[in-house]
Image: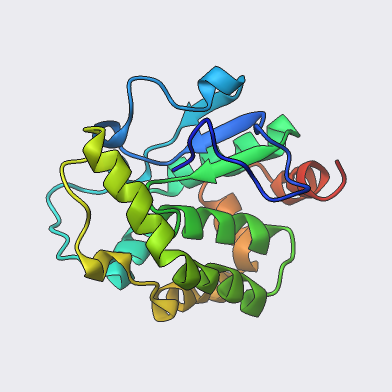
Length: 199
C-alpha cells in the first residue's frame, strides 16, 4: 500500500501515472493517497470475484488457484489496461505479495520473463516482512482495516506461486494462450510488450 509521502528508489517514475489498486472495497480509504499526487487510480478488486459460498481457511495455495479460476475477467481487465495506457504504472494490494504477486507475475510471464526469475522476484517479499507489517498496522490505526492478518497470511509460499506458473505453463499456448482464452484480445502480448518494453 503506497502513501503520498513515499520516496521511491532512484530511477523509478514517481508518482506513477496509473495506479491499479487490487484491494476490496472494505480496505479502501475515502481517497487513494496518490490521487493527490496526480495519479489516475483504477480499482480492480480481485478478491471480490471469489465465490462467497466457498469458504477460505487461510490456505494461500488454494487462494492463488481460486483467483486464477474465479477472477479471470478481472485479470484480463488489468492486463488490457496496462497494455492500453503506456504509462508508468503501480500495481498494489494491501501487503503487495498475493494479489500483486499473481498479477505482476502474469504480466512478466506474458512479456517473456523466465519462470525462475518471476519466482525469485516474488520471494523478495520475504525480506520486506517488517515493512509490510508496519504498513498494515498503519492501515489498522487509520481505520482502513479491522486487524492485521494472522502471521500465516503473511507467508510467502513459493509452492503456491509455482502452482500458478504450472497452470499457465500447462495451458495450450502457455501464459499467452491462458489469458486469451480468459477473454483478452489476440494481440495482447504484442500490445503489452509495446507498453512495457518499448516505451
